[in-house]
Image (tube, rainbow, N blue to C red):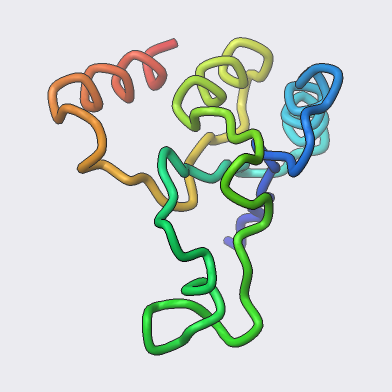
Length: 117
């Protein structure tokens, strides 16, 4: 069986008035039968954002970091917890999780708590 996954933007180049649209999108995905939604995890950025466009350094040609270093990025696990509160069946995920930036026990407990809720 094929599953449909949709990425939701938990970041913005400029601050939105509020972030309710993100929870509205999660609710809509849940209601529409989408199988999984994911958000991005970025806790910190390197000094040289040009590396996003350098394949030799792990980037992609013409790639760029979507907000610049001062853009708004909501913390991914907190966003998933909020989404869990307003959805009932859609699976929640991160497209990548920068685990080493979090204490291992806290990360495990946070993820397990979101799963239970």
